[in-house]
Image (cartoon, rainbow, N blue to C red; front, side, top):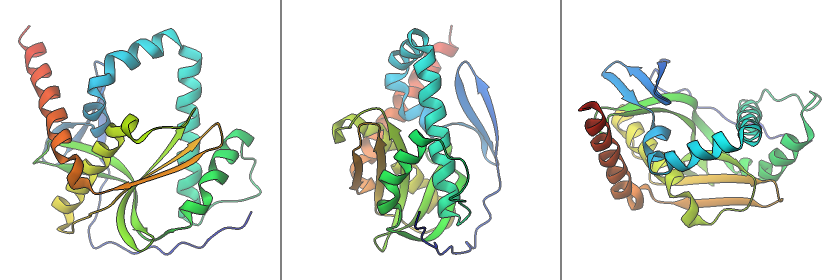
Length: 223
């Protein structure tokens, strides 16, 4: 396996880790500015009931998909950190997904952050960003996904909302704007998909998702 040597830029900012807690199936982060719900909890809230039922009805597949995602993310992280051992016993299905993505991963360079916690007092959200780096020379929020089948762009608005939240958090914490989102998806049917867009296009949808989540939490807390 040919492997790229990625350049990493030491950030001036110190991104300390955050403690996480789980309440009623939701993940929260204890930030220096208070306890905030996770980005994925809020942006996926509209589909929460659907996926909760799906996980209950399909426990084996749910565990498989979760395991696939964790292992793929770990493999990508090790690769970009220049720590991947090509001789390590990588499971074939995970390796297949990685190899789909590798040509696109090689378009990444000048890495500023990987798997660091970010938060925003403006959005009242927190989360852990997959990657902040240049993609084809453009500073981007980059998100990595595995999927059972090919996605349409209209299927993944929540992914774009997540990345938009991270772009806002990054600017709030560092003062540096990010104007590009990259969503990379490796699929089990062999398609490698890369979607790029500007986070400004999803800011309104993100704010609507936050508002809907907060309104439902307020109603639930009243009873």
